[in-house]
Image 1 (cartoon, rainbow, N blue to C red):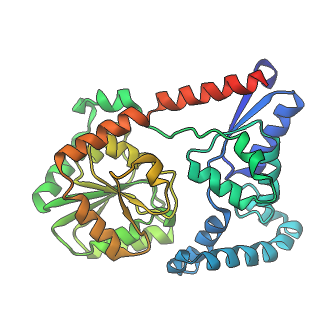
Image 2: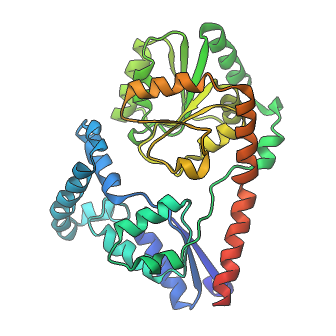
Image 3: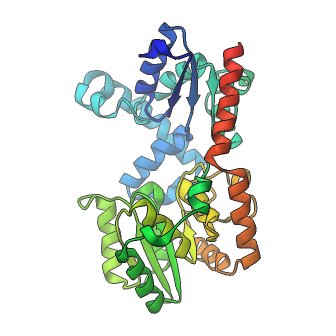
Length: 349
């Protein structure tokens, strides 16, 4: 199958073994390989998982804690992965693999082109893999933007919206002064729980959490509990694409106080619909939303609340500017053009 192509384009360093295996097959066939890195700092990734399990996510703010936890984890987990096949089988193709850095280093060196989503992501790779000469990584890297489907956004037709979501929005607007929402899978990294706590029993604010969840998941159960106690927090599960756009368009503010983003497709989509957005400081905000996003510390519920309140004051002209800025600069059409240029470049070498 690979034989019929000139270039093999791979995605995601978060599944290192799958990516490495595909890269080796491509190289055996003497094909050029592009890699969309989709990389997050490995210390933060692993420490975030461990701290969430320990219910100590507040420590995530300290870099020395994250680095120390990662070092301790890799030292302790390495022999377990070697001698216990069940553990290795379950976690080997993830950042929880204690040999993750070794695998990713091989991928970075063998790929012909690296396509991070931001300069910040590229700089993180350079810092985390400082054993590779920085010019090696920089020379083979080209930033490819994340984006929105501009045609879909500009031609959005509400005739596809379900009566359920229309009814929900209408009902919540009658009950609450403002509707604040977060679209995304309900999980620790997306940090819905702190958003819910920031507006717990503040009835002026209706909070909508829309995304896939598992009912038996302990994190979801915490959100479910606070939702039952506070009548202004509403968990509605995953939505259709059409309903998702309608929801984001009708929010007063979209909030994504996550522990990592690049910068979050839902943030870009909400902004392209003219909805004010609160983002996270763990995101390449300056490269994407410039001064249009309101940047929160996702570990500080007071700061999340304050940034939402500021976003509510965003004037209409600024919302229009933000919408136009995203639709001009961050589209899949632009990402495709940037990617095609990289293809042409590596085919010439």
